[in-house]
Image (cartoon, rainbow, N blue to C red):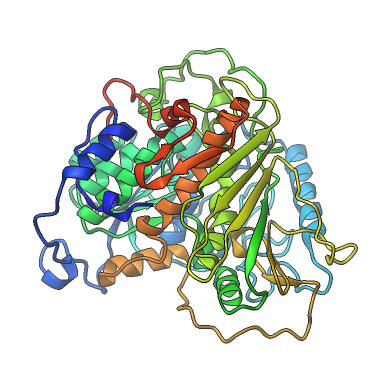
Length: 530
C-alpha cells in the first residue's frame, strides 16, 4: 500500500472514486504539523484517571458484545439465542446448537493439547460451561467479559435501528442516551469521546468517517470497510485527525498471534514460501449461493430502515436479508472473508511482513447477482520482502479444506492456518490460537518472547486513548489487512473472466481487467456520503 496516499487530504464527496482519490492525493500536500493532544493537555485530552464516554452504534449482535467488553452492564443482560433471521430460538433449537458446538470443540481438540479454556488458550471456557448465575438456555457467551466486572469506560450513548433486536443491550445500560439515527446522536451528544461501530459492513465507512472528522476515537468491527477506497480514506482520516483507532480482529492482541510471529521471524521453520488458510463459514451461519433475494415486506414500524440501508442501494425490506443475514449479500456484506479473514489472515500478514499481493486468482461455487458463493478457493502471490522470499497464500471457505500436510499425524485435525517453511511447519487456529508444530514436538520450547504483550483489544484501545499512544491494531495496520480481504471478493466476482488479476497497489488498480476496478468504490444512495 502506498502510505503517502493515505497521509494526504481528500475532500469527502458522494462517490469517492478510485480515480478521484488518487488524483487528489497526488496533488495535496501537508502544510502543518499535528501536535498530539496528549502533549498539549487541556480540552480534548483524556487523563489516564478519567473515564471516557463511549457510544455504541449497532449493538444487537457483535456490537453489543463489544460494549460489554468495555463496560459491564448496570443491569444483568439476558440475551436470547436467535435464529439467523433474528427470531428467538426454541429450546429444541438451542439444544441442537449446543450439541453442534460441543461436537465442533471435540473435533478440533488436538491429541495431547491442553483442553479448550485452559490457561493461555485465549480465555475460552470449556464446552458446556456457562456464565456464572445465568440460564444456559438463554445466554450467548461473551468471552472473558462474562467472568469479571469491567469499567474501562462509560457507555454514554447507544444507537440501534431495531429496539426489538437490541433491547436486551439497551436495558443493560439504563443511563445511556438512546438513538436510532447515529447522525442525530453525533450532532447532539458533544460529550462523546469515542465510538464502537458494530453495524453491517456497508455502514462502517460513512459512520467512521463522520466520527473521525469530529475527532472522536473509533473502534470498528471487521472488516474496516466494504470497499478499498473507503478503507484507504478511513486510514487517511484517522491520521489527519490524530485520534486512536482500532479494528475488531481480537486475535491481533492475543498471545498465540505473537508467538506465531516470534516463531516465524526467529526462523523456527526457516523461510516460508506457502501458507494455507481456511474457514467453515458461511456454512450453517448465514445464506449464500446461487439464490435470489427474498421479496420485500412492510418495514416494522419500530425499525429505522433508512438508516440501516445507509449508503446501500434502495431495496425492499425483508427480515431474511436483515440482521445477521446481511453478510452474504453483495449490497451489504463481505462474505466469509469479511467475517473470518481478519481473524485468520492477520497473523500471516504480520509474521511474514506481507504487503499487497501482486496477483490474485479465484474460483467458487455458483453465486447470484444478490448473494456471494457458498464456497471459494482463492490464491494470492506476494513478492519478496527483504530476506523473505515470495510467498503463495491460499484461502478456502464454505467448509473446503486444503490438502493435509504429509507429516500431520493421523487423527489430528487440521487448523485454520498452516505455514510451510523449508525447515518445518507451523499451524494455528482462528485468531492465532494455539500455534503448534507439525509434526508435534512436546520438547519444543520456542524462542524467548520479544514482542510487547498487551491486554485484550478493547483494553489496548482504551489505554491508547488515555495515554496518547497508538493502539496495537490501528487503521494504519488494519487497513492493509482489510484491503487484502476486499481484493478477495473482487477476484471472486470476476472469476468468469478466466484470468489471474494483476494488482498495482500504488495506483489502486487491477491492471489487466479494467471492469474489476468498478468494485473499488460504488455510488452512494442519495443523502449519504463518505
